[in-house]
Image 1 (cartoon, rainbow, N blue to C red):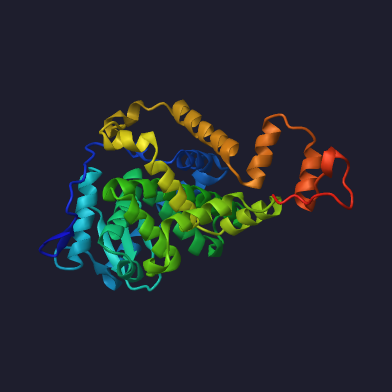
Image 2: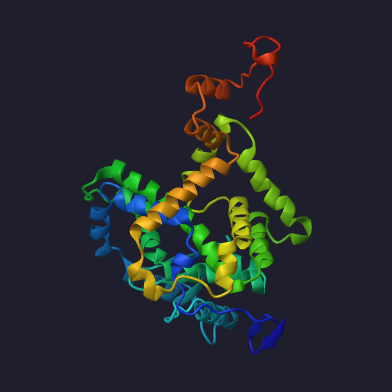
Length: 358
């Protein structure tokens, strides 16, 4: 690493992506979840109502008064990273960025009119320069994709909307919208992870950052391959009961599980699409207006079909079997949930029947 003033810059050249569209890095599940969210009954009504009522000015004043604004004279190394990330992704207006005192490592991009990036002291103290560069790129990716608008609505609804009696849709409808927003936001994190990799252009730094978020600042005690193996075990182990538990564990979260994020990012970094972007072949923003909505639908549908086909999760495997014309649905569900299998030679279940391990 070389040092210029307060800024530490990588001793290597990184590529820039002039005019890049967020479509270049957006995860197909991100786009499809957002489409599903917008089609949710009542979402348009809530969105229009809250757009004029959300206390965005209050949020800006709060951060201005009770956090530290990143700039030339405060957290300058973060300011240089922010400007660098905006330069690489060709985001013309640099968002305001604040550091908030909070020991929990976290970052977010919120705002309706203009995005604001907030990082916690826990995150700043946890990550090294290159790991933090990927995180700043992650948040700039959120800004470029326009995610901050929906993130702000999710934040507001989660914290306040259930207490506001005058909202006409009622608690059940609001809960449904919050659940749909969370589902979309989890997918949007996968897109932003990709943006962070495009900015940092160091997949090892991205992996290290995710490992630290999961296990703290003990890299000498951790191993990337073993960490990714956890994601493999998480996806493939157990039976249908575990698949249901995974869904239940995920529902209240705004972020995907860390090992899953690492595995998804590693897979994308080895994908031809990533290499094409690095070679300068990517969608441009000036082409966005000509983008076919039906093409986006087809891409999302193809992604989900491929996910079901290749997934090792017991529930997805069952769905794939059924879609592929496999036989007795009732029998399969019974056997999966009871753990019962068939005896040798395909005979009926009995005392000596082998137990299915998922």
